View 1: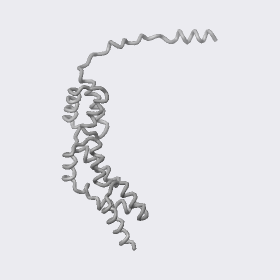
View 2: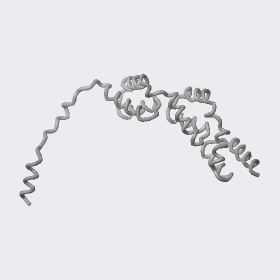
View 3: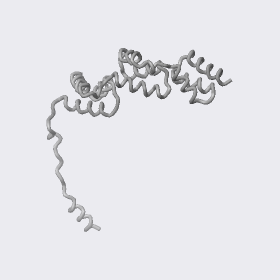
View 4: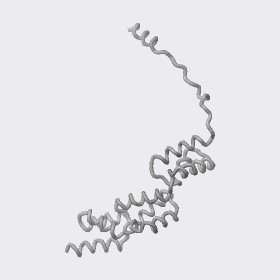
Length: 170
């Protein structure tokens, strides 16, 4: 047994590790720029999200601004497009416009961006049509009312939608 252990040790050559100080020096903002480009390229993100991502990693404000400018220039950060995609996603899940506005605000989109989105895409703010769609998917009036309330619809929209379904069915 000792002979095989000796053979194993002799067969594995030792490779010297590079010293940690021997890295190639980069400009100070290059690391943050690469991180921002990688993060922004992996999904739909607002400028606020990219800024928060870099700030959590210790980037200085001037480095964040430079990285955001580069990301915007390359089309990776576009608040209007990101807000529209998120709003369409949540509308497709049956959320009310008030809940969508809250979610967009929570993601860091500016109030102006949200208002412009509502003005530019009025179908996204059509709660009555979306409530009827949710009502058609859910079985039972009380279950539909609970589902609509959970998705941020106001009491008037819920009453009108459930009442319309009751009138049509009964």
